[in-house]
Image (tube, rainbow over all chains, first blue to last red; front, side, top):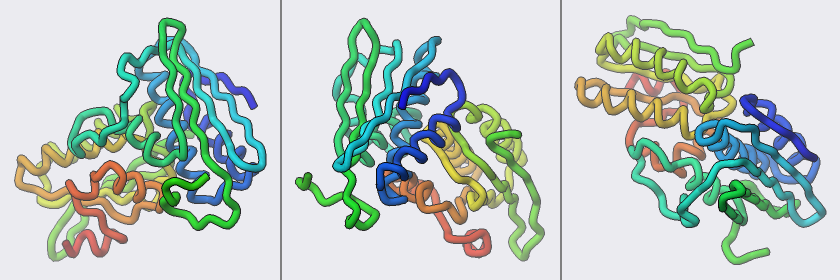
Length: 134
Length: 115
C-alpha cells in the first residue's frame, strides 16, 4: 500500500490501523504502530514543506511501515534516550522507538526514510514485547 | 467535521473546577487550537483544571507538549491540572513519556475532582 500525505494525518492513521488489523496485529500493537507512524508523519509536517509518502507491507511474520520525506535528521541517535518529561520536544521519536519492535532510520541530502517493523505474534498478549525474541 | 472538538464547563462542586472535555484526535495539525483553548482557561487562574480525555481517540506528542505547557503555567499559579479517563493508547503514551509523573492521571472526572 502506497499513500502520499500532506496534512491529513488522521487518514494516515486510519490506513495504518486498517493494514495492521488486516495483518493480524493485536489491537494494542496496532495502536502502537498507529502512534509511531503518526509521530513520524507529524515530523514531515513540522520540518518539510513537501509531501511525505507512507508505504505499508506485511507477510505472515511482520508488518512494515515506511515513511519517506525530504527532511533531514542530522542525529542518527535521535530518540534513543528519553527526553525529560517536561522537555518541549523530542518525545516523538522516543515514542516511535519504544513502541516498535525495530526502527531503521536513514537520512541524507536525499531525505529521510524511517522504517518501522512490528512482529506479528497471534498468541502474544498486548503490552510490552518480550525482549530478545523474534 | 473537526478532527478535534473541545467544550468547557465550570463545575460548582464543593471544590469548584474547570472541566475541558476533548473529543476526536489531537495531533500536530490542531495543536495550536488546543493551545488556544487551554491557555484561555489557564489565564482565568482556576484552582483546578481537569481535562476529560474520554472522548479522545488519539493524542500525539504535539498535543502532549501543549498540555505540559499548560501544566507548567498552572503550577506557577498554584493550581492543579489533572487528566481524566484516557483510553488505553493515550494512557500508554502518557506512561512512555513519563508525563504521568508530572501531572495526575485519574480513571474518571469524578475521581479527578475529588483529588
